[in-house]
Length: 154
Image (tube, rainbow, N blue to C red; front, side):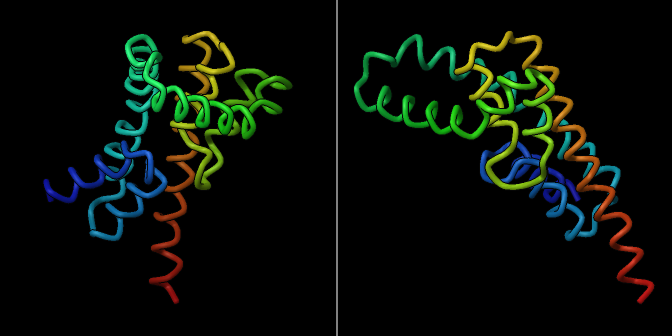
């Protein structure tokens, strides 16, 4: 059980999975949905402070590196393109909605990057991303919980 919970955590904190993949992984492995939800949710909540700090430190120390700068600009432009309309129009609420949509490329990583690039305050961005992650995780876990009953009843 520990290994599956650890894998759920690692998938949920990774940029390729987040809780959108971590929670279903744990559920498929037969773990209790409440444990899967809590582990996936907590891991995905950790993305914002860790990634935001990582962006700040990387920019501070690596900005002079040409390759780093090129990649950072590309990722920043991509995040701006995907989120600028919603964030400019709705602010933190737009960021929250963007992060909460349980689809690929709309999670905490892109939301954090967009908040950083667009200059949103740390506190506002933290609350918006955390709310989005929470709602997304609840949607995924609830769907899995009720889906289990629906498919077993058939």
